[in-house]
Length: 341
Image (cartoon, rainbow, N blue to C red; front, side, top):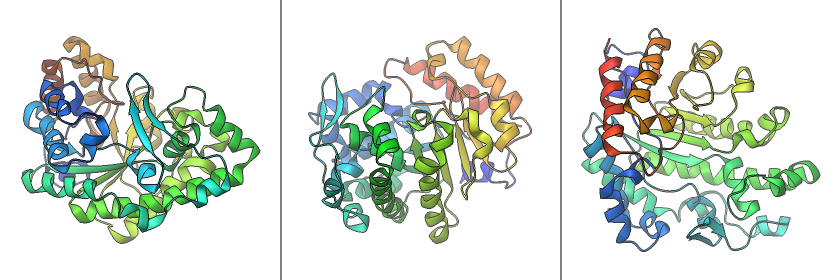
């Protein structure tokens, strides 16, 4: 495949570009499909429609890979936590985790992963329609990011309930993280078995943890997952995306292939610290897509910084829903133009 050849050292003249997860939500075509489902979770549960919106950015915008349409919270949902998407609030779990008994009551391992059949069916449908020179990227939330929702019950700006557990009852937090980790291992395996060519682990809330605690409560679990996948599927590229950890890039380790660089991290710094070990992905500020001039400025900068390195053009976090479609197309076209050597 084009992007694998480009990123992993084979003879090629092309560097790929794709968009972050949620890439379809700025498209009118996505909104039309979304109207058919009643709510977001229903769309995730409908393989035919989820496959359709997975393919939209490839067909309409011209990116070089399809990113599975789903949500990270389907994992704790199928572990047994009732999930709703509430207008104006976002995802909400009816009964957050408070005690050891709450954790014990959750499904674990392959039993929980087996319940995510709609995700695997979506992957099969997409892979069947996607051309052979386009990759399909599967994904999961990192155990820490998933645990924050499971403990807080919804999104948070302070993470105070999670952090209270981290410092006052770390054994319970580790129990949650270990259980989620086992589910995610099987979940990614089954995505690969269904046809995913690459898998990505998002730690969207990595920056909520102080540097001294990050490895203990997040990174080591991500590495455990990547080690497990590599032991069984050594040919499958793994992307790690911990958002907001530029202060401790020198502590990154593990057996994976691509490091996602968020928009707050200078690409030159990431290249200096990690470029000799990993392919780098990112790191344009998503709001630059509101201006074609700002987009081109950043694409030129990234092309220059990474001209002698291995790089995947991408945003430095999720795309916003009001970005003009023509600007997203422009970003892809400029990346493809400037990445040709």
